[in-house]
Image 1 (cartoon, rainbow, N blue to C red):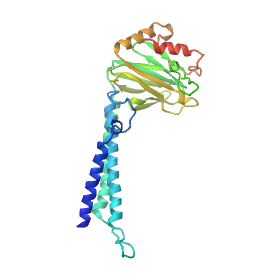
Image 2 (cartoon, one colour):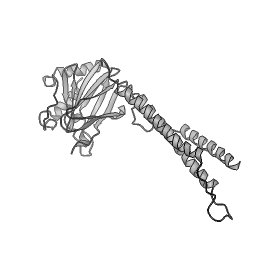
Image 3 (tube, rainbow, N blue to C red):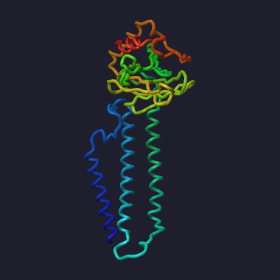
Image 4 (cartoon, rainbow, N blue to C red):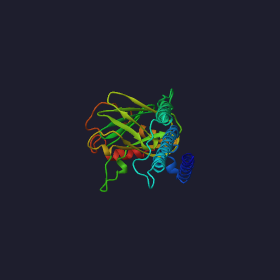
Length: 295
């Protein structure tokens, strides 16, 4: 009787502690400490955030129950004062052993099912995207082809100042119109890279000779952080870029600025060129700055 009462008290205490803990969480904590600015960044980020935070909540509940049972067993079955020898040993409790077998299987199946559904939604191709761009990775910079407009931007390796911070004028910038369905083709000229927009909560490898795709709708204007997420060589840490999501009018003005420059007309290829991204060669820092600021 006392054991049953102790279990009820432990369960109520754990529930109260969990409730108070969750009630005191900040918005950042409630979103699982995901990157600032990711909330509502694309049409996919709510589902990714939901999968992430729900998974952690379930795992924390399981952890609290497990830790609570360990603490309860240590107290309830300890050796009392005046007792000698080992406490009473319990074994072969079939209901508990069945629970410890069935519950993990159910959790794994549940995690797999919800993850597979979210991944399927993210990877589902857009039949007729309103906007198409091609991103070409190269050691250690980025080229952006605006395929529908038949213009491009060629980036250079991001340079750093004396404090190690990126020099803004050397930062490659990818422009996207807000609230437009977008297909992003991902290519590599040399080694395996990875296209990662931090606030979009998703990344994808860029493999030489293979075209991968990302499908999304940017739903929030602003500037978002991009970087290569695959170790690709000596200057991997400098392989940075930005995604600038703007209104259609500003996007059209930027594209018009690219079209007015003969050097930006046409689309770049994936042909290998070891000098493709070095400042002072075919693409200078000043040109990179001028192209990124047009529009």
